[in-house]
Image (cartoon, rainbow, N blue to C red; front, side, top):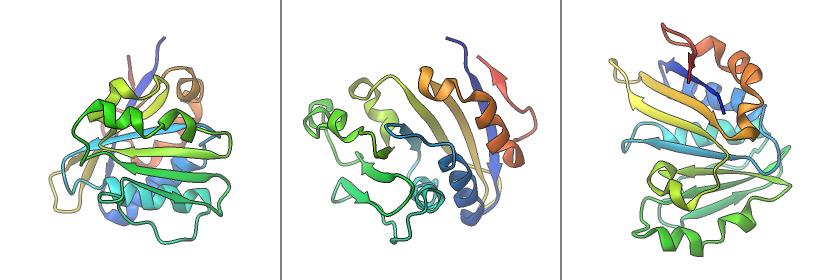
Length: 171
């Protein structure tokens, strides 16, 4: 299946949150968002903005030590996972991610790129890297599988304010 990848840039944690909130506006029940990037790159800042974009008003914190935090009260609930501390793919499977992908929620997985074989094959892939300035972040984002890929045009419109130099890449 063909899909597009976008190269995006933000210049602050607040702008990273705005980007994530824009994407949350496109989220549908049962969606999965996989976040990857180095420690401190902005995965939790992205999660906070995403939750805000869903209409969640509760303070969002990193689930590094609890592994899963659940937030309700928005247009959709958010299952926020951080799998950094898990040692084996079996531990991810044991969490029952399939049951958490329900019709009333979106799942966002920090460090999800490390456990892709244990995740469903339809997701929004968001890779975050440090940029040239202290607060700059570079993103590479793509829809994998039909659920997000079918929203390619809408994704492009949502991320347009942050498109870096080359714009969307056809893959």
